[in-house]
Image (cartoon, rainbow, N blue to C red; front, side, top):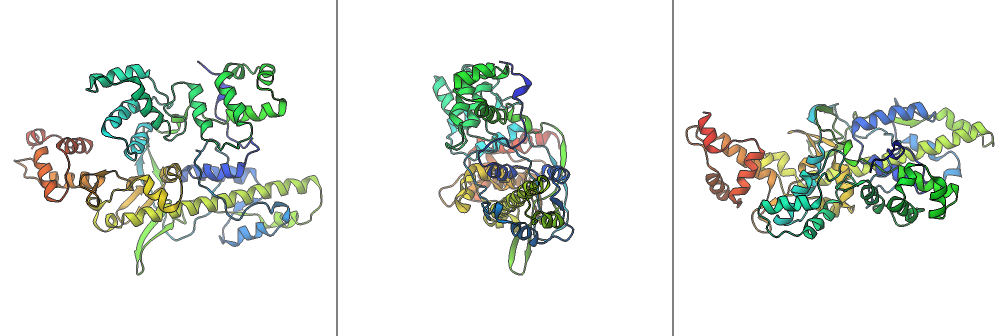
Amino acid sequence: MAMKASLQLRVGTQLTMTPQLQQAIALLQLSTLDLRQEIQQALESNPMLELDEDYGEQVIDEASATDDWASEIPNELATDSDWTDTYPDHGISSGSAGDGPDFERQAAGQTLAGHLIWQLAMTDLNERQRQIAESLIDAVNGAGYLSQPLEEIRDGLRQQGLEGLPTREVEQVLLRLQQFEPTGVFARDLRECLLLQLATLPDDTPLLPQARRLVRQFLEPLAADDRRLLKRRLGLDDDALDEVIALVRSLDPRPGSAFAEVGSSYVTPDLVIYHDASGWRVELNAEALPRLRIQPDYVALVRRADKSQDNQFLKDHLQEARWLLKSLSSRNDTLLRVGREIMAHQIDFLEQGEEAMKPLVLADIAQAVEMHESTISRVTTQKFIHTPRGVFELKYFFSSQVGGGEGDAHSSTAIRARIRKLVADEPPRKPLSDSRLVELLAEDGIKVARRTVAKYREALGIPSSSERKRFR
């Protein structure tokens, strides 16, 4: 069903439900480049904000000391949630603490398929379920929707060797994948896409049942702007209907379109890790983003405490600015906590290289920092860290467990690195076969199947032994 442009994503805070918390959560997924753009927009729209040339923590204290009219704002905002970033408000970044140069590197754009495959590697699906999941990922189009009916995907899997595979089993795997980010991905139509996003919202979201009913039954009247029918069928007055429509229109009808399919971009690390006399230290990159503060002259004007329209204008913008600074403080704190926990698991990588990479999944970090796995996924996507071995996306340090028993397993990243090294050192006239690579890995205590070695070799772009011999 084709929808009118009225259902396109609209950026803004139009809900009565905790827009500040929505903003704090939304900030977690923004890259440094996105934050820089938002900073400029904030400086242009909010007179209470200015660039801070003499950055210091006191800027937030000044804002907190104005009047008690905003005393309901907590000192710290929780940025963790089990619902995803459905409401991208105008997030603005404050400065980051810590010292470090302005590093930049060129990195390939993140594709939707790559993001989904990475999340798949972090799940506990068995081999049969994983094969089904890979076929479902192959069937996702650029907008994030399944481009084939489940029956066709099932038939294709049967031809690949999963004889007698029921559609129900494919659907069960699909339900698991529909929990992936971006929220709404793997939907079979617009209605399911929007319902998936609504399902992640807290149960106490105002008018959530009415919003779900509108999506399930009345998308066509919504597209036609038939307010009379919607009010009658949903039992709402004009104000409540406006709120329900704002909720639905704030959802993303094309959740996969945010991912770049081609090209490359320059990234600035959000974190820096370095070694000093006390050991390895992870800090926020102070040069990653421009720094903001609340304009002190306007704060003084707000203290006049009169009831004029101009003063109320300043008070409203001051409250908004304070929320933003606190949200950004929570974002930076969450990013730093997650980054430090990841690198604590991967110290061997820093000291020895890829071959020493440890198995690590989202659940490991989520448990350590007491956050949801979806939050960890959000924090580690498009966030980069500068290390002595180069600049890496935080997602890079996650790797599934392969081979060996408990306590003797190896990360897939480490195994790929070992295969690359073995091939690089092989005799030119006698390239190593996959079977021989299995034997050499076993000598290092890495027990993997031959087909796993072949899969990793192909992923590394390394030809077969016969082809390598032919090319030399």
